[in-house]
Image (cartoon, rainbow, N blue to C red; front, side, top):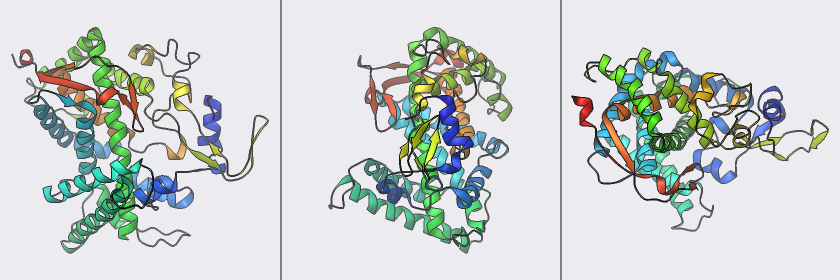
Length: 395
């Protein structure tokens, strides 16, 4: 276990070739062995470039209006209910955004089928891996098989109609992969399916967890909430009281809200650590890490170390007025395996917070505070809240 910035950099950046990503076999089987994050080397580099090319700022800036429509629709639906489980609703929201970026405007029938089976896969992902019929894991394996079939059907329809979309699926379908492993064209459905499901998986729970914590942190600090609301109301009023859509430039000009996101990422440290395995005997600062041993850079320990972040248990976005020291802030990992979707995650959070603070109010229900892990940390019971329209913003 490595709890220093230098050690994390050694494993993830400067000597990344000496360590490989490692996951339990049951998880590889569930997502698919061809998925990006189970690999390293040439194959990983090519797939990562491909995924990244669909998530560059110049690409996702064209998605602002679509993400905004998803955010507004979600918020409106929550306001009609007595209580919502924040984490569950944030998962639905981030799933919709993930589908949008992978498939563009996907037919509702396929979207529902994907969602239905994906939920079953997710429930079994962290369960005990057994093939006994009726268990969560076995149900998840069957649902994963159905997901592959749905994706093959979507791909087949695109090929028949000769649709060449610029979304992530379109990129996968048109990309030729020439490498030593002789995987041929990435148009091979299995490789596409594994990576699409991998991206969906990576995009959902992490973003949903951060959003849930932001609801809590803002609610618990009324002064900060009012300051964020003031920042967002200035943009809201500039857009004719929300009559005009948000622009990419406006999402780039939300300094306080952006610092709130960074501090939420630090405080919650959704990705607490990452798994690596030494591929050869490695010596680090006089210690021998034998080949085959697991190595865990501990991001949470670094993010909560008072040497780098004074009073680490206090939520203080102003600490990000100065850039953190190198390798002390790694909410999206570091090196060649860092999260390629970090810009998309921040964009969808900014858009949702804009509409949330400009047009709504919310209260946390129940008195229980605490953290539950599943495996990502979220507030107890997924943070039950009541949310309502703030009619003063309409005035």
